[in-house]
Image (cartoon, rainbow, N blue to C red; front, top):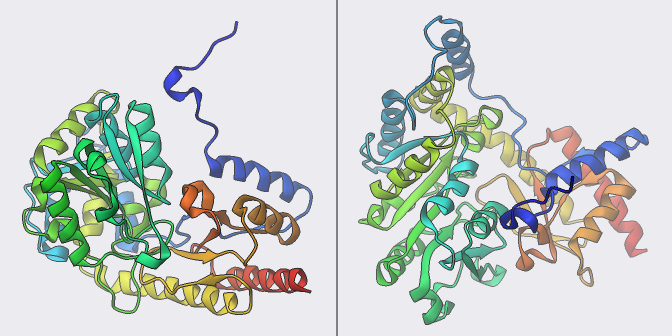
Length: 395
């Protein structure tokens, strides 16, 4: 029996990191020592108090039933408290906060809940693949906004054609940025909010790296802009901010009607989350030692960032120092035009696995992404292999 997929997914291939994982497994079986600095997965555990909360709550006999759709009131209140404390943003827990099973599902669900076939979406290039996938499966059209190094990897809103701006229904932003590590000043968010008001566009700000920052930098929330909740929603995640990637917990906040749309859509698909995880998430947000833990964790990432940057100085690759995020975005050596081929050669010849920039969009071509989610000694080894490999290429 020849069963064909639905047209809306027929053009999709396997997820890049799934394919990469298979390739790495084959190379390891052949005896290659592979060091992965490709995927953005934190390697450190969350705060001890969060783990203890999970264990204690899971041992209770009354925490294993279904939980309220969209998250418990206590979890939503904890999110609102965090936003008030961290950003000075006031949220109504009942109408402006929604629990997610990781922010990735929320990014995808927003497109399905909001977009009709033929609607136009403004998407950054390079950018996270889920923005594109959600739009395509919803039948929407995409206008890509180039993120150029010369413009600090910010989209040039003034360069969007008037016709595209008037047609657009949704605008994706992501700062601190994946994959570039760029940050956005408050002035940019103010301009984006004004742009959204002018053209009646919803801004979706994907912000899982707001608490992964270096050297005193404080990443803002777009909701700090006065009136932003009228035109914007924001996604945040426990994966990067609290090192809880496998726990699958996130949040959508902002425009109450949009939050409601996603809530309605989600209620057709899942039955909320495991109560001990929601309570552990609330404990993470309310942790009295949270600021100290984040400072310590970011110090670990900053050390790794500096290891990468110092090593790159001895190669033909070039990178700017990121103020935030889990990545270093490096320009390939002059003359290298195929990031997939470059990263594949690097992996097969040295065992160092990096992410080709082109998987994030055409404007990512000519770059590769290095993740800081690998402990320092292995990261040093990976960078030394890269240095020696590049020296041989220059010889």
